[in-house]
Length: 116
Picture 1 (spheres, rainbow, N blue to C red):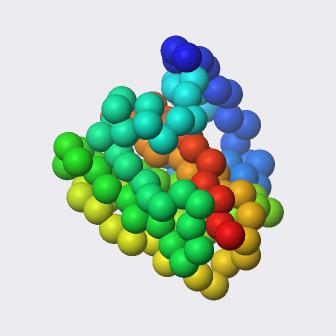
Picture 2 (picture 1 turned 90 degrees about the vertical axis):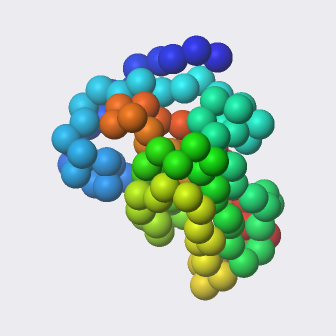
Picture 3 (picture 1 turned 90 degrees about the horizontal axis):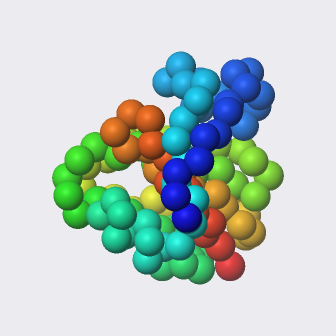
């Protein structure tokens, strides 16, 4: 638990979506628990595991950026949202997805989601 520093090397394929924000050093929350994510940020994602897609809700209305990568590391979703939305992943392959939630410009929360 606690905050840690994550160094991003611009230009790596998996960081291209992040480098648009011109961030080289970010604070990373040490948890990936969905319960902790909701408690700390007001963000909830469900269901997990999922088959068709996931619903993301932001209960406090503060803009949050969600970046989602598929099992091969390909960017499949990158959007700023304030309320809630459904992300349709029905056309994507099964496996482990990584979701990153940006809040307050420099803080990232991450979690793993499983598509069956």
